[in-house]
Amino acid sequence: MSEHDDDVKDDSGLLAVFLGLAVLVGMSGLPATIAWIRFATG
Image: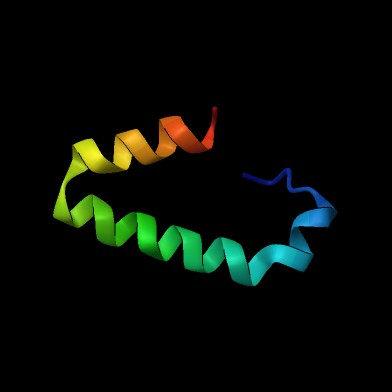
């Protein structure tokens, strides 16, 4: 994961929150996490 877009730095906080929520949802239920990832990635 050495390649990162410089544009992401502006949304680093948002990404951290999104990842945190994703982890919480993952602990609650993996199917929900998979659905979120598929929805987020289009």
